Image 1 (cartoon, rainbow, N blue to C red):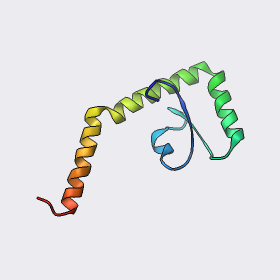
Image 2 (cartoon, helix red, strand yellow):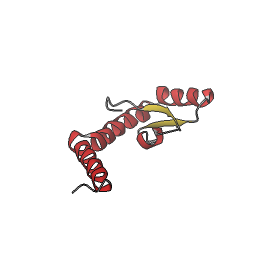
Image 3 (cartoon, one colour):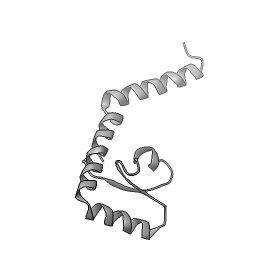
Image 4 (cartoon, rainbow, N blue to C red):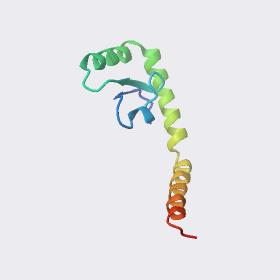
Length: 88
């Protein structure tokens, strides 16, 4: 997604947290080869959808994983661990 390309991923584990179905890519059921075929055909056959999802994905990655935002998330996580451990 950071390269401006739409993603096809299985709708399991953490993928739905990263791939926004229909916006940044397509989520398919695991093991469903027909769904994979349809997703590939959709992206291959529709340039506007492909380009739009790619642009949305790049924007989403930039907004969620920019270094300053990432540093803030890590810092909050460490502060939470320290607070839970009773550190001052």
